[in-house]
Length: 571
Image (cartoon, rainbow, N blue to C red; front, top):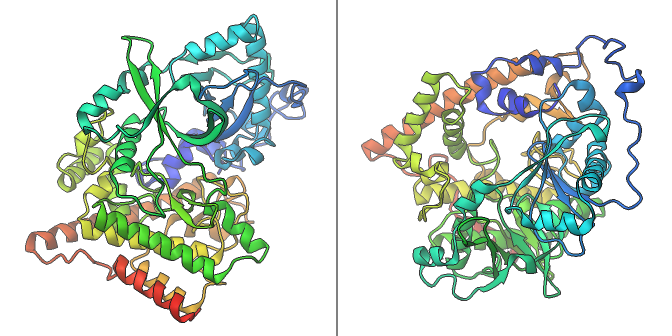
């Protein structure tokens, strides 16, 4: 089964329990009949003439997200590039011949610029933008005036995909809705008091893009100095929540320091100057996700570093809980960067959480309910039932789903808000255990060949398999991850750019069989999740719920064990 948005809904998410395989999903199967001459790749009309880039390209693609439908387009033709985040969006549903020719299956899980630059779709986008820019604008000055006049987060939408770049219609989609949701500094001050006063205010057009690192993060230059610029083109409430959190948590050596600049931009209507983002310190070494595999490959993983990093993460989590009374649901290697002194720094405080199935089972149980409750493709009675489950868990659940920023104390993550502080801590311990497994095995993530994202260096290991982790650490990791469940990856796996049945890799099987296996898995998982949440509710009503259903250690106990290992050098 080829990768597409529908495979997420019909295989990867728990929505698969209620959805039938679509015609398109069957079409993407490798068992489709041989194409006719009209549709064959042997027919010259169905081949791309050239993917050679222009001698002087006007654009660059720095990355990809949205499951291969959104590309970070940077107009290198401009002398200085403001962080407009005018990304390219391509239509998701394409015939197999187009998906194959343009490498759309690989773009689905490829995020980084170095690998993405080798894909046909990237070169095709650059050539399309070159033709559009040269034909739609008189010169670079005219294009620059256009580019800077649009609302932040506007889109370049490819209305169609054609092998002939001259036949692709590019439509500009101004993001006026985002401008309406943006708040001014005065409005934020009225909500937060003096919280933002120490931050320096800079104009949007004094911020110059060096590269786009993520869908919400750019490396920028301000007055000749490099910074990280954080901004969201959707879900602005998460940006403001993170800004408030970073300005109010007590400082810690292993937590990203408070923001440095507030970035203000004039909006198109009403004369509003809105806060569109903020800057933080730039840590050049990158994240553990990319560093660990390189250290492993070159046999440079050192026990003292692995222990020190594990201790630092644990201390940071304990600090957030005991000194700032907040939770951290985003613990994964992407969000752990390495300082110039080789210490870890935790970043990303949107509090959205990790991908489906990556969190603790008790969090996943609630997350599954929420995914069913918010999917319009679900049968009405199913959706209403799960919406009521979410309201029982979080009475103000409906308010959390509103787009506008409402200054909530606990953020917008219903799955974590539903938990008590003790339960939140133990869910963090679970993620900490998986993170420590990655650190000691030297891999980019706990799941091999994850559907959502491929890594530059894919591991042959999958949690909880062990090769390099010392026995004492294995025992601690196993304690931290008590309650772990068999996930979808044990049934269905991404093999290159296909979803296949794990037990039948190398054998002939079709998309319907993959979808049927996913449906069976999710029916069982949803049954478990409902039963677990019912038991939790019943025990809470009786006063018998102890908040530690899986008997995991507390953060302080994990820290004590790590410090003991470090002191006694038992590894």
